[in-house]
Length: 204
Length: 259
Image 1 (cartoon, chains in turn blue, yellow):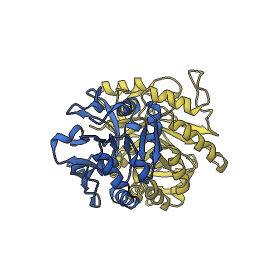
Image 2 (cartoon, rainbow over the protein chains, first blue to last red):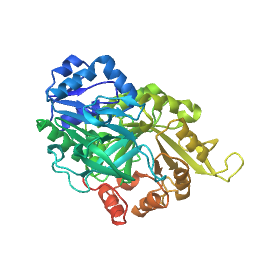
Image 3 (cartoon, each protein chain N blue to C red):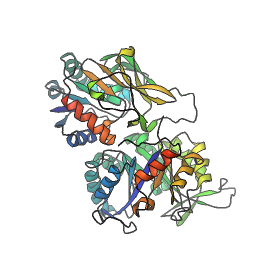
Image 4 (cartoon, rainbow over the protein chains, first blue to last red):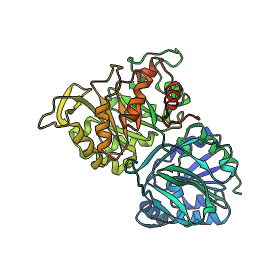
């Protein structure tokens, strides 16, 4: 059973629906006590880091997520859920959860024809094998909508990149935490297959 | 590299597909969700449901349809037609729409763009513009005027100014719908699309006039559009989404093909 964290950051029912389609049982909670019991977590979100972190702190969900991470519970972050997994974000700036060393940064594009936010389908290039990325081939595309992206301190934690003017990190992983800047729940069949792999992932 | 997008628009009336859409296969007649699912499997990058009557009573029917679509289609889709307020937009988002399109309501009261963007985010707020060409004059220097009520009522508003104003107010994307090109199948309004795409920093979706795959190629290259919206070219079964995308790919346009 997957616990989907609701922290007032965007429409997360699309994640629930996609899990269902991918054959993964899931439910939504905004209660840190319920989250503390979770055996598998999806931490989604669309929106701004400052208001998201404020809500997480006030609700006590930030501690629940850190505890779950320490306890080895497999956690999947999506979009904002990936950005606030790092220590801080340039958006605000904001102090974040710190599950992975590093910082979330804004696109600094040299090519003025490129628009921000980066919206649409883009290639995900796998740099390093990971059970959750199994089966992703060259040219496979996923759906993005964002202006910031996660930039881990260590290259070791970067699993995939995408190209928008320059390569940017779009999948990060550290121990039992994995997170994507793209939206598997909006990425058609390839996204549903990704969620199906998360269903079977033990966090190793 | 970011792909160009192929978007299909479905006109909906009373929760059913509008009669203007004819079908090649009989299986899905009338049901927008089944038709949308078919396009989803055919590789469309995004869908638009356009509520063509959008009276108050029909709002709830639309919400119900959006809920059903959201459990069948795992790509972004937007809803347009008759969206007047933050409440309308929020309800559609909660029902599962990724984006909402505002049009006439923003002409009547432009603050509604900012209000909706604040509530659901700029990335989910699309400003849809119906545009016709006119002789350039002091009031409409670009020679393109915004029209409303399905293209019949002129507004005296310059389309180029309105596009920039829409971006400033918080719209995250623009739909450029040429009333002159709409239904002609002679191709998109390239000059108009390019003028606006070059003037704003947000993605531009070209709409109206697609009759051949070449038209999509033109508007995505010369027209500087980020996405091409089609309707009858796929509804009448002349082309599948796959065929359109393979054509574009063959001509060197970056587009999603693995799905």
